[in-house]
Image (tube, rainbow, N blue to C red; front, side):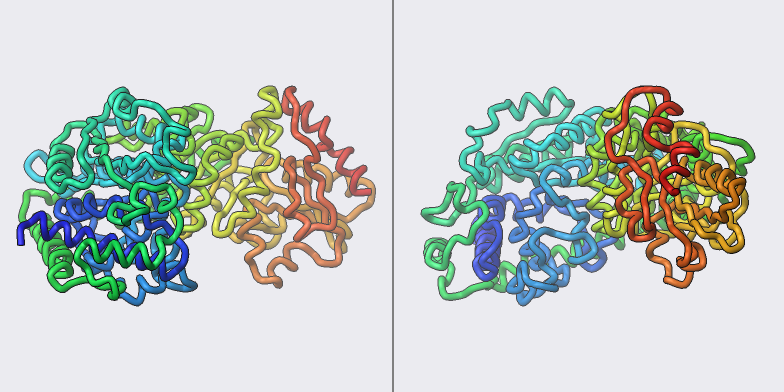
Length: 640
């Protein structure tokens, strides 16, 4: 049997596994897997990975930006030997199966990242490439390389239509990420029909203008695909391969039809397709032994590659590089010398000083801002510029920034942050959601946190954003009220390795708070000030904590007994046991929450909420706090 004849049999095996999976589930997308099967076979020959150890650091990364094409993804991971069995393929899209409708990181072995909605996977691939370039700059030497792998991404028309792909590919071209290879499944079909309905741009011209190598191949010619991938690997730029394919290749009457995109093909169509390909139409979920043997070569090849890599570590003149790698892989948080704050300061400033203290002690800590580092205070002093240094300049590309940073966090021994104004978190919400869903420890730095933004006006004043992110499961929003709370927030966030954390910081200076009366900031909320026999408990976060203290002082003058509770992390506080919450918030008191935001979530803890019932306005910050009722007299009037 000639090599291409065998490749054809392998590709058809992928096609019919995918078709059978979708048919059995009566749900899914058969068209893309069938169209990409030939590309997948050739890519298998180029991919360096180890099914026996999916976390091998120097493996090639493979990202499926079109995550709906899970028929292809799970077929490959079954055929390569990542632990999936035929029963798992039969349980496609079923409850508690290893084969959910879209691939999920940590759920199925080999899945590098949860790409989620279209486009994010391209940014994730850029992130993996950037992570590898940073790692290589730290641990490679003039005579030997420890990090020298490639990053592959499979994408479709939908991915390239999403705006995030433009942002991410622009970053990739600017940074000359020459180990990044995107394979574009150009089948000219979307759900609604031919792509002529919605897109007419010159894809080649677009990528050439962004500094990419643009290659093209017949996506159903094994030799053409092989030549293109070989050329892409040799490129000195990021490369995109435009693979001209036919959706649902081999599906008879549905070949090339948009009707094959997101619906089962039907038993009759699948049976006829199998018959025409020389397969037994009566057999479902079937792979011949010779096909399985060819795919399972990945196990032996990958194991050998990893053992050679380990041998390289031990024998090459890389002693210093190995020490650097070890310091990246095993950060020592006890080395962090946290600053002490003794005067009023904006929490964006205290946060920046804390981040620099972390960076000095933790060499894996890196990141950047969406063109706002002077305002976010996120510049890491004397830490250099990516790829050799730890300051990444993302440009004004919030969504790509967050998706890239998700991938950097999952690459291996790196602890990344991303930063922007809080109101611009709207642009990156999809990636923040994926970070929470996947359990990615990314640190989001969001400054200019309320109407305290001032003169920029309501378009730049984040009123509803705290509520939005507090409602996100496994996502921890810290809004510190001073530098000491900020330190405790970071200490806790560094421990939370399976959760993203957001630091929502003020533009304006905030006073230094007194010591806690009961509880700890690291538990999300604590009793800051108290009176015996208090009748009122005031709760607040961030800039409103000092306001609550000022309200308490004036009510004390009027004979009222008041407690004040600071809640720097609402999400963490409500996770505490009821006994702790009752110690901090006396149940018999009238409970009032104060926050210069929408604040509806506070009703879980409070009887009344003094928050924002409208958008903000353009004026100096102190005038805005007065206008919207965040003054001592206004709060007291509302309480009474």
